[in-house]
Image 1 (tube, rainbow, N blue to C red):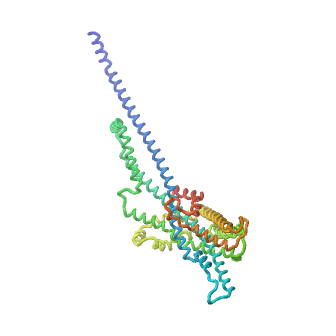
Image 2: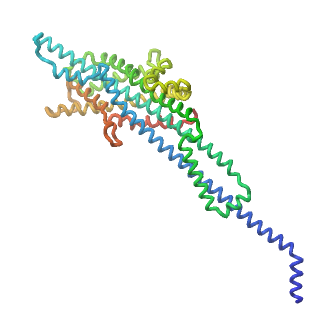
Image 3: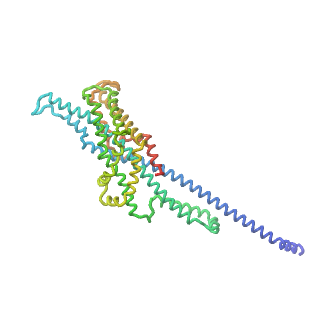
Length: 444
């Protein structure tokens, strides 16, 4: 009995110490649990943020690749249209060649052999001149189309990404404002930690889905429609190059082809190297006129893009009346995109890329011509790159090269439907570098 009383007395004397110790241990355990939960939650959020950053970078990379593929597909669709435009613009050399082959040797009105041969010689000279003019016009126009299309689509892809990023940031701020939990809520969530993680994941997925649509359901539909029409008007600027700008290249080609090839008759013999030098001189002369700044040089911007006075004419040709009226209400996006595009077109980087595209085209043309010239003569004699050939043969293979450069393979269902010439230009590293700099330029 005395021992029991002593124990009770001891407990009574130290009960406060025991209670304080018990409370301290409980508080320490609770605090440690909360700290562990907060640390674990912070680490989870950091991991989630890293995953989101990785996902965004991967999405940007995939979108960039997709944009370049879209650019190539756009060119594939424009090529057949451009071929029709050239054929209607006095450069239907296939028709000229057929006329030459089917030329009547004798008619009831004329039996003089000299007159007949003169007429035939005129056709050969016209074929010689027009085939080279056409191959040069194709080179500069398609190269410029590549530059323009890459710039346009990469600007729009960047704009779409920025809009998605802004919407995602807005949603994240909303979620952060709702995430100010009290201590009791945090403690209760601690015991349901797995459920909390599922909620965070589900919430993140919902935010990603919402941001990927570009616009929330509450966005103003009319504003979205106007922005879309602005972008359509921006893409329709290629109409100018397709219908007017290329004529500048054709005029320059006529001018310098006449100077370089006028004294060469269709029957004259040329080696591949000699023909290559003459053609190279034409390219160099045109490059000086459009790529080197001087008083009498041609402004490449006016070749590629319409002036402010001509812009409305272009939009009339490419948009319907309702779209045109909406665009007249608000063309802010179009003007902003055009301003940036003009700066890019006039930059030294774009000039370098255009020059590289032309040089790559020249190499493609000469490889193609050499292959065809040798193939056409291989049946009759042993020939090589050092052999001489008639200028008439160079005219014929130039005509065939024009056809191959404008080959329409869009009917194929394969992803690799573009022709060899377009693939050659699409692989140019300088073009990809320029596209990347435009796509990642978020300071505009």
